[in-house]
Every structure is written in C-alpha cells, then in structure tokens.
Length: 366
Image 1 (cartoon, rainbow, N blue to C red):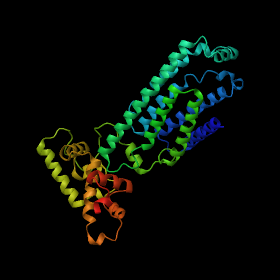
Image 2 (cartoon, rainbow, N blue to C red):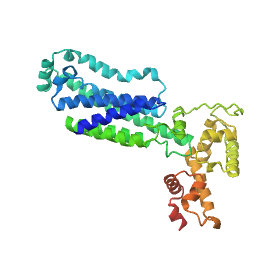
Image 3 (cartoon, one colour):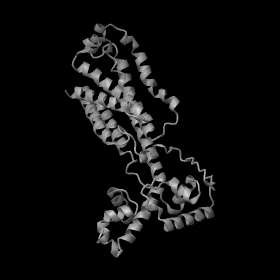
Image 4 (cartoon, one colour):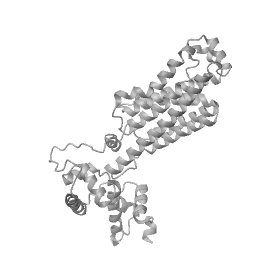
C-alpha cells in the first residue's frame, strides 16, 4: 500500500507539472525527475511483489536507475537558481547512467528465466559489476548533493547582494529537498531496499505536500520569484538603462570615489527613505544613484561592511526605533509600525531587529 501510494502520488505530481502553463526550466526538470523516480519505484514494487512475470522485459532495469537521482537534483537546483549557463552540456551528467546501461546490456539480453535465476542467486556471476555499480551510485549521490548545496549557497549570497527581502526567495524548499535526498543516500548505505524505498515514498509525499504549498513550483510564479529567477549567478550582472547613462562601469574604484558614492547613498536614503519600499532591490537603488549595481554593491560592502540585504534592513530597524518613540504611534502595534518601515513579515522584522540590537522588539522596548 505504501509503495502504491508513492507511485500514484508521483505520477499525479508529474501530471500537475506537465499541465502547468508557462512552465519554467526547473518545472520541466522536476517533472522528468519525478517521472523517472516514479518509474523506479514501480520497478521496485514489481520486484517486491515478485510480479515481474507481468513485465519480464523490465527485470534488471532498476539497477542503474539511482544514477539519475544526483544529476536531476543538481540540474533542478541549477534551474531553480538560474545557474544553468551550460545547458547544451546537461546531457553529460547522465553519461554514467548510459554507460551503466551499456555495461549491463549483456544481462538485459538474457532470457527472462536466466535473468530471474541471477536475481534469485543474489547476482551470481555479476558480483564485481554489481559492486562497481553500487560504489558509483554512492559516489554520484554524495557528489551531486554537495554540488547542489554549493549552488544553493551561491544563490543565497546573490540574494543578499541584490535584494532587501528574502522570505519568498530564499528557496528553503530547495534546502529541504537536498537534505531529504542526502538522508536517502545515508539510508542506502546502512539499510536494505525495503527501508530505502519506504523513505523514498515519504520523500515523494514531502515533495507533494510542500511543493504544492510552495508558490512557483506547482503553481505560477509570483512577480517576486520571477525577479530572483532572472538574477544571474554571475557577480557581474548586466543592467540595461535606456533613460540614464551609467557613470561607473568598472569594479575598481578609488577611495575618494567610494566615499563620494556612499555620501550620495546616505543622502538619498535619509531624504527619500527608500528602505520603506519592502520590495527594494539593488538595481532600483543603483538607478536612483545613476551607478552600476556592481559599483553600488562594492560601495556598501566596502564602506558599510555589509551586504545589501543587511544594509537596507538596518535602515529599517533604525527607522522603527525612531518611530516607536513618537507619542502618536503608541496606539499602533509593533508589527504595523514595522510594516511602515519597510518590513514585509513578522519573521523578517524580528530576525533583523535582533540581529541589529541583540534584543527582540519587546525586550528593546522594556
């Protein structure tokens, strides 16, 4: 029942993704990933029920299937964080799977009775090949999980340098996905197939539950998420500006230029309080100052010693500290004042306030 539930849920999610309008690259990769995972689970179900007589030609095809998991996780991470710059080489990630299929071809060409005999005798005659395949599967899973975490870490760094908010674009969903995949590989090392595929089923249920709740995965993306998906992982983001000529194009600035731009930044922040815009981005602010986003990022990092996210949210915290002292604001809740200062959620407000002051908002007021 558990395996059947997993198979049904998996192919149901594939149908949802396939029928989604305006599918992103990540959606397509996830749909393929789920399809092959569901197919692999179906093959194991036949093996578990000893029912390969219904599909004799499929016996053995489950052996190389785990080699698909790592590449799909990596490509999905790359697609979701817009770091898949070399799409034409994506097929190379599946080369180990293709090689494994070719190596196993002599086994696949055996008659059903011959293949069944090999299975019943724990792979007799193919011991070395199975050992090599097992080691390759483990290495693939571990390496691709680490590479996916590296992609996610780089994405988060880019968010902090480009956006003043991250609640909807930090891709915590992806972090859980990679963590869940890593747990499966640990189970592969220490436990038998029955436990492995039971964990896989719960993993698929997790994808179904949180994936549907996650805006931008099984539903259309919000404007905010489209913004972050359009941000290149390359640090040198190119911004088109048709209305104004950008003054600075290079990343090397003298200390005088850095301080001059920082002075303008301070003045415009004090005069226009741009941090009150909860969706403020580095690009918008750089256009206000008529400088290249890379230059502005360099100024904030060098002079303030902070990334863009921390800099803007510190401005919001300071604005809150001023507003909370005003008598006319005593009738308002802390959260309503925080929203007026540019915060877009209670979580973001509390986290950034404590980071800046070492106290929670209520502790600070006391």
